[in-house]
Amino acid sequence: MEQVVSARPLTSRTLETEAPPMSHFLTITEAAAEIRGGRLDPLDLVERCLEQIRKYEDRIHAWVLVDEEGARRSARELAAEEPRGPLHGIPVGVKDIVDVAGFPTKAGSPLRENHLAWEDAPVVTALRRAGAIILGKTVTVEFACFDPSPTRNPWSPTLEHTPGGSSSGSAAALALGMCLGAIGTQTGGSLVRPASYCGVAACKPTFGRIRRRGIVPVSYHLDHPGPMARTVGDLEIMLPCLMDNVDRVNVDFDARHGRQANDAPPPRLGLLEQFFMEEADEPIRQATRAALTRLRDSGATIRPVTFPDGFSQVQPMHRRIMAVEAAAFHREQFAAHRDSYGPKIAGLLDEGLTISGVDYAAALADQRRFRRMVGSLLDDVDALVMPATDTTAPATMETTGTPKFQAPWSCAGLPVVSFPCGVASDGMPAALQLVGRTNEETRLLEVARWCERRLAFDAMPPLCES
Image 1 (cartoon, rainbow, N blue to C red):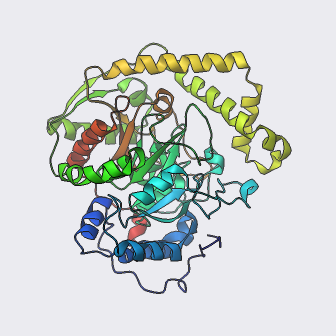
Image 2: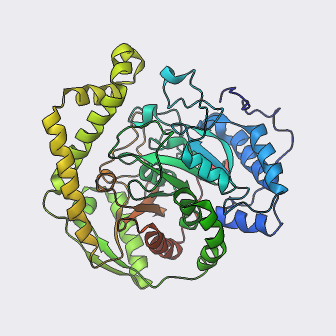
């Protein structure tokens, strides 16, 4: 971590007070209730997070910077106020492609070493208005593409498994209780995949539901900002703060929070065995089947659903759109500073620069057709269900994994919620992802929470035991 503006490198000397002991990692749901009830001071919660960072950051590398004093100052101010919103006093990490005023937005690139954001991105403004404490900036892979970041997966006993990408720091920080919520982004699979590899939850909302201004772009037609947290219940608190007028969020908070204690009826789920179960490896298939059996035994209806014609074109169409739009954004800088780009993003940009306008237009037309077709899969079910990833986190730092299980839903623009469903036979977490109807995130989160409660995942990363 680096010294930037008010943020200082975190060391044992800069932690002025010892954090209180943690018997477990508090969720947003738990911490918000404790803060509102006067039983937990936001400053104590910040110190807990800082203690986790001090304990693990030298091995995990989840943070670009931590604003210790700024977080403490915000916590003291919030402790003296009436609750601003559902996230009052909750420490949150922000992926380092998102502008936070006074901090650099480095986007994992040496080309942005001297960048400084002059204002918050709207998504950060929304967090602050809801009462969140911005703890710092989390690591991203370079320009949110493919070249791996230095972040390590806390579930890896040897710290040699990828945490996924590109929201790698956000996922790893959540898995170790370094923050209670985080912001990530997804163009292909950059929310769902790292969350799944690191045993936490994520929501990719409907395309366009969260404003993207102040976020370094990858692809105009594919980029989705979204929340990450330890549980689906926490996502239910975070997401409305990012999408809605905060005044309406404040009015609805108590009713929404109360609804979390009540269960929705058992859902109707459409299982996409075609491609997803066929392409998953055996540990993922076993974990998925076990989870689906528990959901069926709890009352869920699960029936097979078949993809429409043309699904085989989704992956190449997604890649083409992403490559062209990334190349358009980076064109001048890439020409002038090619050697400063990592090999994988350089390959993507080279590819994008060679694609013709006719082929790009055809890919956009295919995307529109796919979006229309895929909506019909949800006519008779509450959500589609499938494994979130084709494997558990690969045992290498040379890759962030493949987006092939997540990219179709980024291309379709439909909302997705992922959450851990068990520990696979290789000792790494496995996850389910649910896909819902356009703009129906609330219903999708209700279905996901119903499933999450039946699966009752409560395993912790092995690193927590060290």
